[in-house]
Image (cartoon, rainbow, N blue to C red; front, side, top):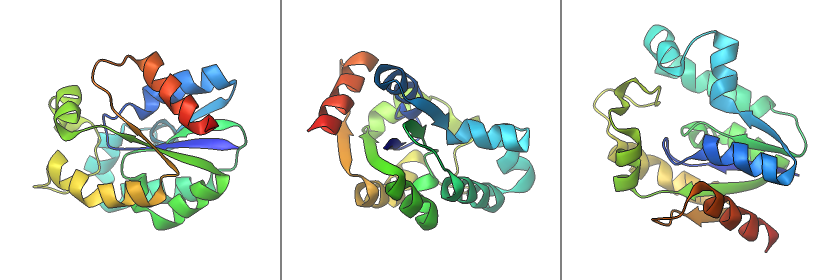
Length: 165
């Protein structure tokens, strides 16, 4: 069984994923890092040079082709918009939505314009959250809510508790 983490950029999928994998004795795969390595560029560099459509297509392709077992997979925030990828990832394991409120995402991301977030010109964090949230909820087997004041270990404890129940 695998664990697939989904959520908005800044929700902590990558950081939580590393700790969760270590605690469970699982491998770890960050799809954004995989794309960056494959393309030999940052996410923002890919979007700037090859375009948003190319990036989203590459992300969907990567998500659709993952084959693994006992791995925590941290997806990019926009992976949830790729139907084929998400259906494949759901078959691979349990999908966990890390739900962080907009004000906390803004605080964590600061100036997010150069962070490689898949968004069209004129879009804001609020607009992409409104667009993606129904998909996060659709694909999630488990939702873990952000709790103000919890540290990373407490959040991982919460994920493990929900996985075990």
